[in-house]
Amino acid sequence: MELKKQTIHGATWSAIDNVASSGITFLVGIVLARILTPTEFGIAGMIAIFIAVSNSIVESGFSAALIRKISANEKDYNTVFYFNLLVGIVLFTLLYVCAPLISRFFKEPLLISVTRVIGTVIILNAFGIIQRTILVKQIDFKTQAKISVIASVVSGIVGIGMALMGFGVWSLVGQQVSRQLFNSLLLWLYNQWRPSWVFSTKSLKDLFGFGSKLLLSGLINTIYNNIYYVIIGRFYSADQLGQYTRAEQFNSIFSSNLTNVVQRVSYPALCHIQDEEERLREAYRKVIKTTMLITFACMLGLAAVAKPLILTLIGEKWLPAVAYLQILCFSGMLYPLHAINLNILQVKGRSDLFLKLEIIKKIIGVVPIVLGIFYGIEAMLLCGVLTSIICYFLNSYYSARLINYSTKNQVEDIMPALCVSLIVAAIMWSLSLLQLPMIILLLLQCVVGLALALFIYEKMHLAEYGEVKQIAVSLLNKKWKRQLQ
Image (tube, rainbow, N blue to C red; front, side):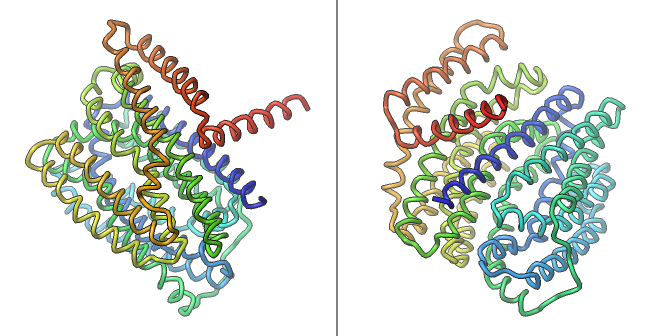
């Protein structure tokens, strides 16, 4: 019961962290999208894959290894800290030297200086990885939430201020660098752990045995998740890439944040009961049902309101992003499901299966990339939806064998939530046939969708809905009691 309370508390603060920091970043992005052009967002998007891959290498899978290792000690933490920092410096240097090649590849001269400045986030991130890992291991997401919110607010002010002063694409660079800088500084301020001059090759080898496979898996996944930026940036225009980045930002508000919450909280919680098979299976099942009820509702609802949402918030110049966003929502709604299934492989120590799956899935994922080169961006995204579905069945097949919870059982468990969300989203979208001002249409769709979903769930008495409702009521009661005191 103590673990359940700790997990719910962690999930709550992890959700607050993601909602608050991403919400602030989202609002800042809306302001910047109104000031800047799609082309300027496209230029910033061209370098995204290099930063993402570098950060993945710096992390090296050691965070997951440290979280899983119940008896992790100071020697382990110090060894990983210095290793991460060294790798970060090496990668920054490599990126600095390769900046002219990146610029020539995308045929964008400005990328030389942009790459070199934004590359500093790699070193800044390396400084904070162990501090963050310790907080995750302790399921302390309250502290992380405070740090993320402060860093998001400060970096948002920096980005908007630079945009208003006419810095163009550099305002996006300034926002990213300042956010990572303040995030790392605050992690050191709020966390009492400090490195000492200790380094153990034995500790490094022990952790790397598990983490290396996760590193390679993470690299493959990171490259694949960001390859669309490369394809669109290289074969299309900066303007089209900018449209895609805005669609991806709207999509990630729910898909990526829900995935992050699920991964960050469920992994350390499930690790605590990794040897209790029946308890692990039931906890895992509950996580899937509850998570997907929220995910399906959010992602399908977002697809339904995509046009009035984008036109109301960032204007007509971003109209092409509507179609991209609607397609992305259908692949994005499966991201948390992927994450939950892959968590089981890590919990069970099967990083070899994790790696094997990533390789298989990314080979399948080559198909939409090829379609994108020859048939256009929308064809690439549509094929991505199909590959996402195929990849889910692969993930669930392997995780099912480890905890005796089959893909068939998973689908049966999530199907009620999916059907309700599809019906509600269809009704929300049908309202767009009315000739209403965009802001009125958006409000009407949201009110009708929320009211209809709650009505149906109340009538169906789904256990997962009851779980979500109980958590929400509990949080509201606590807030109400604090206000009365």
